[in-house]
Length: 60
Image (cartoon, rainbow, N blue to C red; front, top):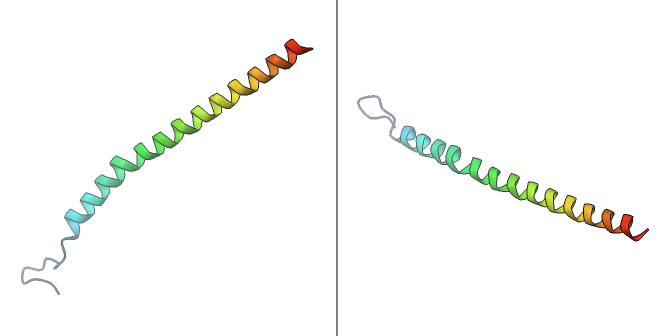
């Protein structure tokens, strides 16, 4: 199903460009949000562990 000028009937170029721009624009931000949430969770876990350890040291 090609046209007379040899171009394909489906415009894959613009669609591929759009998909690539969406992937490169939004997926890193999603990964960044997930990484920030993970780091926050690690930081809060360390804070809790440090607080518990301090309580145990002070309680002895």
